[in-house]
Image (tube, rainbow, N blue to C red; front, side, top):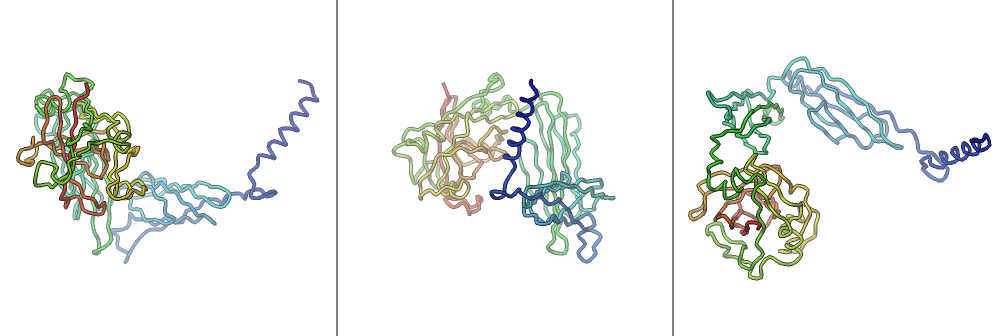
Length: 392
């Protein structure tokens, strides 16, 4: 390259760089972001030593107006000031990203916790004698006011201090226990502990392998890709009714499930169940949402009884839980539950389905519901019905 061309190139590059500087106005550069700063101190109400593992963190960045915290992997927060309880002894790196005029900056601070709190969540996992697939889980946190056990398949057990976990498939399973202790009548001390269980082989005696309901739902052990179902759109194939009966006595879809609400939503999907690892696999994320729940959860403005099609990222592959339950007289007596916020194509924030009838080619299910998103699901008085058929 000639010298003159190099000089010309350098001059152009300089002009380009100057032109690309961020501007506040026509001729002002943006200010330099403030340096992120953390202010922290122990949270000690009435100097109670039981709180010695709790800290208050403040975003002390000059002019900072957006705070993003990572409290050493314990929890995250977007508050400018927050209180964190470090249950276990160790060194925690607290990270803060703070936005101020002109941009954002980051900083971190080490917090050393010398001893584990007497309120730290604690539990044991012990294999049952002579059984490689069942484990006894015992919560041992002292003075616990509430506890929750969460398994890696998404199953949640609230206010349970002991359980027997069954892991029939080879893999690594995570067990998480969260406990809460209430001090002085109001202050909650909450912590979480996790442990893992390794299972090296499938259980050849897994009852699900020979259970006829599991086989009808999933195709059984020989169906390596599972069994796929599609919603029936025909008239009188579903509807709503009271819980006390097994028929949609209130409204039985006399015109079927047609129109964009269904054809671009639940009816455009397919629902696969695999026996191994109990996997539920929807074809896509197209769902139909109850009008009131669409307004409450999806920021829609639907009129009363005007259900709507929606693409929901929470409708995803997840483990399912199929359990034999007393059920309603005349039903199959099994319930089907979806974990991790997934569901069977229709969203109304209800995840437990009762199987009324199940054959090789047809599945008729129902689940409780209420038209108000604010009502407690335990008080649901109505049920919603759907029919599914095996995909050919």
